[in-house]
Length: 174
Image 1 (spheres, rainbow, N blue to C red):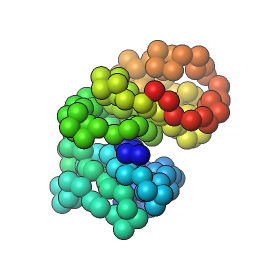
Image 2: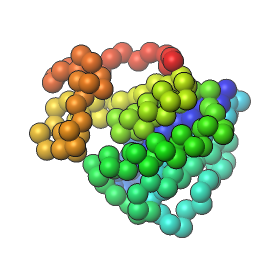
Image 3: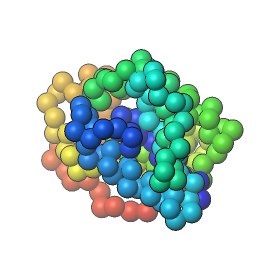
Image 4: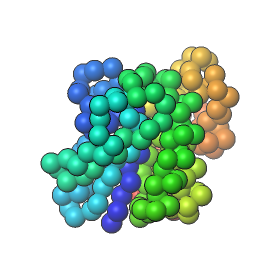
């Protein structure tokens, strides 16, 4: 199976302990271990350093694709929403020529880009929120980037209410 993982701010190649580099980076790297089971796994993350190669093949057997969306510099994840349009356009062009069997998004902003492209290309997709990402998206003060941008989580995830819990894990589907 050909699996596209989209993690716009959490590269599995990041040095842990840096700004916005921690649990999600490890989680994406661990999921990419599906490559050891014979799957073709590509992780799409925003290019945040001009010296990075466009694509890096890892020793673990998966590739990391640095998507040119926004400036090639480290930015806080709270500033990345405005680059999800260019991120989605890149994925759309890439996947139109090299179609994955499934797209798996990590974090809500990756979910926006992934959902737009997967809907356009009729790809099966799923998105994953860590408990901390879910809590932050639902309970943060009104000045989060999502609320500043006019993003309404109720339209994106019907039934989400302040204080709600993330849904139980389930298999990806189309």
